[in-house]
Length: 403
Figure (cartoon, rainbow, N blue to C red):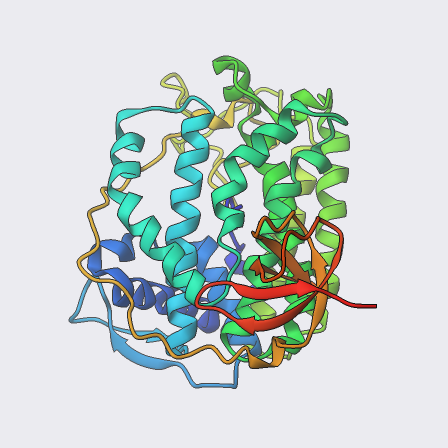
């Protein structure tokens, strides 16, 4: 689900810049609390966006000065979050990285570093799913993602929209359940649309970004599979994914966090425009990030995106070969425990729809929210109406709705 969520800093005002930095540091502190200092290495812009979204709908809280997790002698501004929200952010971060590594393995990326990372994160991934289960997140979405993605890639119709469906559903639920983590279920539908739109955009962008590398390694690529080779229709599709995200952000409470989200969408739109330009013109740069040893010129601009998209004068088209840094990951020294109880008693009596067959376990939807569920009375087929009768430890208990 996660990818290139870079924000152009020039688009951030003072309040938004402070909110973005505080969210980044708040994410780092949440990860350290969950699994020790080594787990804080997973802090990035992508999962920090989840912290921004949570802070946008949570009761206003001033930024707190705390010791930096990496440099304890330095004080940084941290976005305070409830204990439940911190546990949710950390668990989503770990589960997402573990799922991404598993997806890379199925795509044939079996490099030594990634194999080691998968081994070290295996236990953490299980712990993260256990925490998400306590928070009633439908963890089956993570478990089913690689197999479901592979099945869709083999099926028809072969469109990028269809290929992006698993990522879109997972992104929507990650954001929607964030509303439950802070006790603001009224924002679940809005955040679902925001998360689904961003995940869809990221899927399409990553497919474009990795296109040359996928061709070189003979791996699946969504745009090539859909027979879309021209960059202009790709840019149009990406722009269409951002429209519902903008509509969702406009409904959020005003503040620094909302300004961050607006700046993010503006930055993604600007990147989308640039991919449709002709990049095969004479020129080069001195960033040293594209992997070409012969590049030695100096046309880097102050607003450079770090070669996620080449400058208009650049002849280098395979941006996937830019140098990447890989961080060493160690096992967690502790995990988040004793979570605040999640009050979901209001769900009892609500009716919804079975998304999968309940045999007896499966997944249901209540409005825009998905939950793992167990059928109390026999098997329930996908598409049938269900009613929640009880809240289990990690699953809702449901039965077939009457009438």
